[in-house]
Length: 187
Image 1 (spheres, helix red, strand yellow):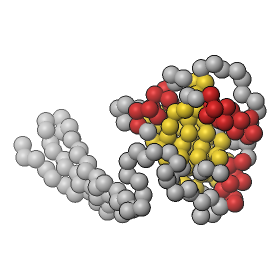
Image 2 (cartoon, rainbow, N blue to C red):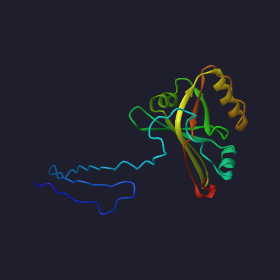
Image 3 (tube, rainbow, N blue to C red):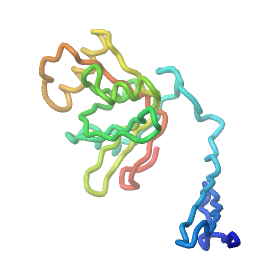
Image 4 (cartoon, helix red, strand yellow):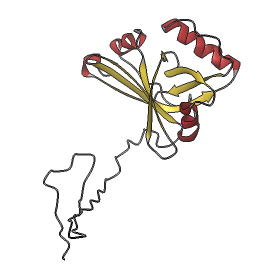
């Protein structure tokens, strides 16, 4: 049996090129597909690896984006597991416009804490109907009483007083990328 080679009929998007190889391995016609993607281009001013917090230029958000982030909504936190697969959980978070960071309170030893310590990047997304906003950047776990108290105060200002938790830690995301719906404008 001879191997067959075919090209996909769709044209690749602007960020990736695809090449598929189809081979007839057995009489049961099992197909093996290999897809090769080109690495996305990174702007020269965009950090490419872990960057220490507070060393990034602050992202400028529009007034509509800032108002949306002050409304009482929950969001999702996306981190990467050790195997590279995404871990997405519902969370309460606060955006701190003064230093351009996201603040999250959570428990020591949680999966999100382990993931942040392993991959050092995270994203928070808030959705309300057709409006959505994603804030991405390097993430850090804080265990100091000062940083935890700061995160608890931010949480209380947006939601309610947090319950007592002696195993609490704070996650901070220094925002270096903002994605959102067009209705919230672009900075």
